[in-house]
Length: 192
Image (cartoon, rainbow, N blue to C red; front, side):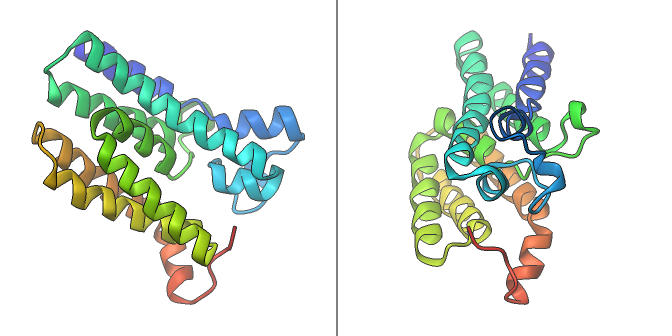
């Protein structure tokens, strides 16, 4: 059951909603335009903010669905929940359908946290929204939101596996944002 749930988490996470939505509703291939990323921010740049918002929600939902199913089928198995969450995140970042070249995982991470640590997810979302609203730079908002979620995750009651999952997710998001971090340091990061 654990392996099946992790595999399902990966497959759900690997659904490239950014590619599907942008192609279907705007006739665009986000991999060939903007930053080339399949996530919501690039979809918003290439195909419009409405479609970007749709992709943001769908990418979060696929993570939430994978973890929600694990919690429902195996309640009390926090390590399994965390494993399925990580599998969904990795599915988004390394989707089998796109030769393992996916997105940065922020929305999918938010979706899994919305199920496992909703207050931490909310804190991350509020920080992300505030920073994007003030500075118009999604990558800074994403990284700061991840750090906020991480800080709160260790303060909340619950299984110890969940905060350590957030550590892995934040470290992975730093890795997926390494080019953005370089542009931030050089003051050349893209605005939304």
